[in-house]
Image (cartoon, rainbow, N blue to C red):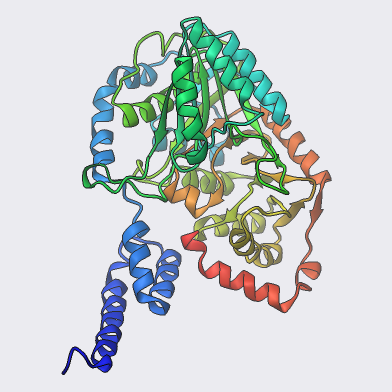
Length: 478
């Protein structure tokens, strides 16, 4: 054997590829769903070295060691706040009947966040109006303003928010901003000096760093959208702080909720936990966690999810709620790439006589994701799920209504990325009046959507079917 002989190198290359295939055939399926394992093994068997590279980089949804160390310190650091929430006088257990009550108990146990009564909830569907409302609340702040957003842009739409933060800081209000280091990677370059000049603290969440002691993964993102003012007013939902037309040819429609009352403390806790993970500063004083006045009669809870939790909190709650539904379920999402439990829950609900609706945009903003999403439509339609394709704009809203009793609104998409990789937050609202308002918004979207039929969908071209099926093979990796 000569090292100068090209045949020798070819043999070594072929042997290395088979070694990668055989080793990863054993490693990949470990503690992974069959669908995800198939997606990874398909890539590895076709392109072993490329598959190995991606697997090393993003193959396991494990937080880096330094983040796990911070998480281990979190319960002790925030023990005073955790104790206050656990014994809060507004704790409430709504009676929703035997089927949905199981989902209520599940929600309480998943995030260790109690259901708190005494809240007022307002649905916000006007994109620019939501930003204007947030600016007004920032201008009224007396103690602090906390903003946590996946995308915080530096553009015309956010200029009023930035100016309001500057005015608040000048009044002595403590302003803290968290923006995802990848989602806001461009804007942070200009926002950091701008905020520093204004006296606003800003940190990029989960910065990607190759240093061994600060290593972070590219694909584990903080996708939450939270605003808290004085511990009294909170916002969450799907809207980022960016112009609605920030992508060429796409106009985004979103839905946010503005809440007042005790549940704001749970949104505050999620912000404080993320702030601690990035800065090690503990926010647990009565200034950050005041005793909020009763603002209404709505029971609600904030449910966080992400790699920091041992279970997929958002996925498990959504699946449980669908199984508990008795009349009607509407799921609204911009990205629908379900795992097997979610798909089966929707199909089973139809067989139980539940009217199941999926509301998605006909227009997509990620071509591969859109093709993978479309690959699920046929089996949904054949199972009796009604698929509505919204046509006016790109519907980026993320919410769920169950019967006329429960509304879930937040940042989580119905895809594997939101279930496994992203840090998300969902506000679970146990109130028929708020749910009726959400249903009215869903009906408005139905009016602007095309109801898909099996006959029409099966007429799509052969080439489109091929592209959809190929994209579906990658769906566990998207």
